[in-house]
Length: 127
Image 1 (cartoon, helix red, strand yellow):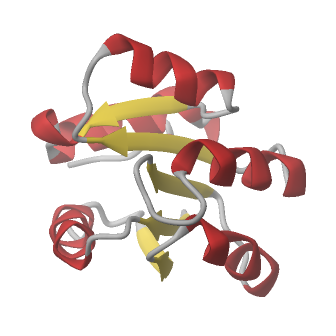
Image 2 (tube, rainbow, N blue to C red):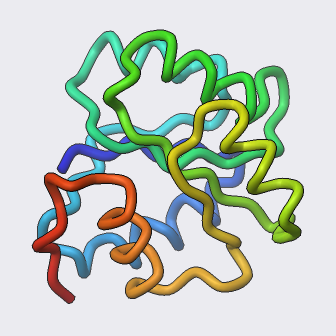
């Protein structure tokens, strides 16, 4: 599974990568620090799953998710944010996201569960 990681905070990206490295099937092929960079990465690489932060400068995660889905509706988008209330996840889904994770609760198991929920091709992911 080829992953694009989108978050404006480099520390969060590094933390997320440290969790994903324990999932053998996960391959982070690109990173973006802003939603403006997403389309370029989609055109440059084959991406299956995008982990999308919500609050970013210039183009936020809501708009960037719409860009991803307009480019290829088969790409799965999992929103993630420190804003963990229901309305945020609902707004991400309304923007086209296939799932949502709160950064406050993120674990390897939760990431795997969310990937399995959004993608039938990756239902055999192991810990």
